[in-house]
Length: 363
Image (cartoon, rainbow, N blue to C red; front, side, top):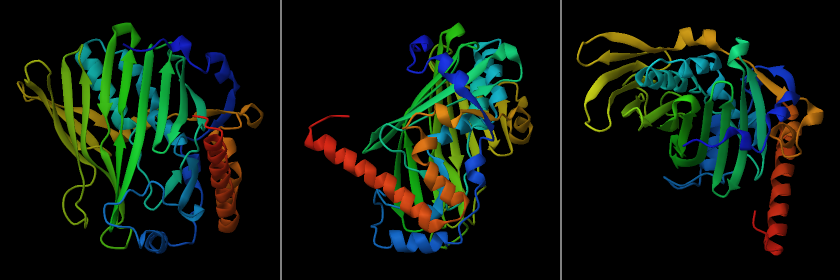
């Protein structure tokens, strides 16, 4: 059962402060540093053992995008005008399809060799999205870093007018395997449709960044299995994300395949196949009718921009405040200042953590 949206820490009135319009991918448009990603990888990861967890590896600001990973939560709404379609589905099956479509539309296409800032403990990010049709209301996003070791982020997205609510926990686990980084995304996405009393559980595939040492093609891709489940609708989708292999010489990048079946009988209803950044199809097993489930290019018509709070309405622990000076330096391509500002944030956190430990204060 979904939670009561009126009990949020941030009331709806708090989002009236979001008056600054910006592109969702604004931070990713910063100029690249002249520093070689592969050179940095060899220097930083040279002594790391194969299979080691690299969560705590400190990277220079030169290979960072000027955004916190909390801000990446906005990507779920990069084609946000598809969200109202979810609750407008006439049948449980149709709504199930719409949830899958909305999920595919929010998959990020990340740049090779770039990563966001690791959020500090207690860091928050909030924004809103205004839908073109006023009857669809506004969608609100709140993210918070609730743990630093291990890193865990909590994400809450809701649209009270549509009766749509999403809650998720994300615990990334990055591991180094020579020429590639494997990033497992632990945690479940829970979507609740209030008007239908339907709850959907979704798991994430793994992200691979290959070619970091210069071997094979440089690319970022999803690999592994993602599950979509709605017990009330009695439906389960299993989607396998396929990559091009570690050398990048076989397979189709961003390819997906899978099925949708009944939970209680395991009866397969639809087969799924396609390429998620092109077209994904669903085929009715009985009738053999093949239809488009998701069209990447067509979905661009549902793109949205984000509304952020003005500077004077930002919390001290807001991502836009915590990383402001570091981001400004990255935009100016001032690597030294960016590294200094990043170090200042990290050392400030170590000091606070030490003070809590001495006072025996739990976060």
